[in-house]
Length: 151
Image (cartoon, rainbow, N blue to C red; front, side):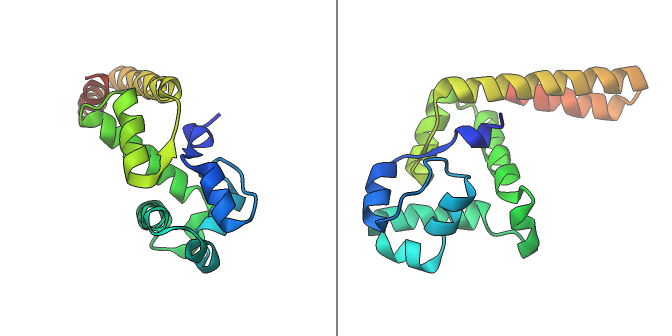
């Protein structure tokens, strides 16, 4: 299961109450994004919620090519966001706090930890493959990325 399947709206009940429409808790579910980011959905929520939803839309739902929106673009952008937070030295608990503050999203710290651990393992494998292939440049790049995630 992808990490984006484990990212939820922080104030789901409050948002559903304001919208008067039932939507899934998952932030990256199609129905959630359709309702929340339509013009009508945004007009029904309070100002604080609207501001955070607009920030989310700007950062994750605004590809250069509009067709990319339906090819995993938001999910890839969000994964990049999580990796950048980790590279800044934040741990899983702090990452969850930042997501909540910036976008009104939450996740379980254990899910974030598992995602980060898998990312480090993937980079280790890529680093080893680059070494076996004799590609020193790529090996060094993977090593730096792995160290940045490992802390």
